[in-house]
Amino acid sequence: MKALVICAYMGPLPSLMPLWIRTAAHNPQVDFLIVSDQAEPEGLPANVRFQHATLAALAEHWSALLGFEVALTSPYKLNDFKSLFWSLVPELDRYDYWGYCDLDVLFGDLAPLLDQRLGRYDMILSEGHLRFLRNDDRTRQAFRAVRQPRGWRDILTDPVNFGMDEHWGINQVFRAPDRGWFANSALIADIHPSFRQMRRLPHLPNHRIQAFYWQDGRIYREFIAADERRTEEYLYIHLQKRTVPIDPASADAAAFNIDPGGIAPRRPGDEAERSMRRRNPWHWPNSAEARILIRQLRSRMFGGTDVFEPKDRPSPESGA
Image (tube, rainbow, N blue to C red; front, side, top):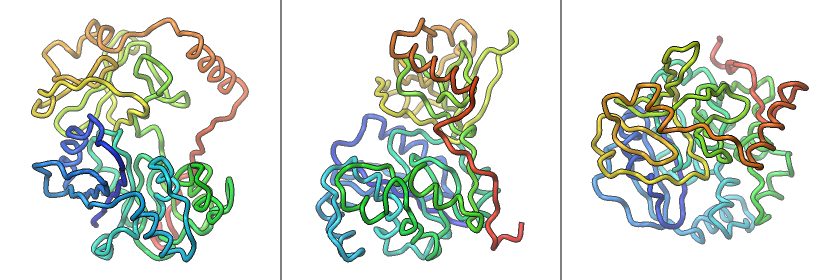
């Protein structure tokens, strides 16, 4: 089965773009489409292509599609339109699944997820930075069932971003028992934007000594637990609101570290505990970080989370 992932991005491309492209190229079973008002980078791999469009042109396109004038006046508002990205692709019928993603991610190996889940679920994954949706009319029109935090029409005619692409938008639609949805945020290295140390979001386990890296098409976390080095593999790493220097040599390195101080080629010895401590140091939390830690502790003691994790429900069509 074939999948297409779409990203609409306006303005100068992020510094992470060359590595985004490189990690996308290691997933040839997925095609990637970037819709942008910027020039196409040179040397794109076979599974990555650019499509030129301005923000005004996208607003005109969706206004014509929906039959009313949408409020798309800033790039950030594109988040509310992600559930309509399918409409930007005339040749969509070539694909079994379509989806959307962001440019602040680096991909690992997506093949195991897709080999196991494509065909069984209407929606795969729960975050706006990467998800896949079945390419049928019912799933493409699912945005019309959004009722939270407001109705879908109200959201698309208001210039404020409501996050319709995630938890309090399209995710609520797929909570229905007749829609198949697979989600497991533990498969993602979703990095907390409010900490100096690179650590995953609070509902996911972290270690005081840990670091992240990409090697041979895969994303890993290495960490020390029970006095020994261990590793975990992730589908991708999400570097939300975090800009780090990038060593140009990373573009050709067999492996590169992803650290708060920058992205650089991985060297012999980087797997050692001493290197992990140096590359991704733990700090005494500042006041803002301390408040986050207190909220995390309170949540763990009394329950509750901001992230909804649905059950692994197969779609009715799969027979599973």
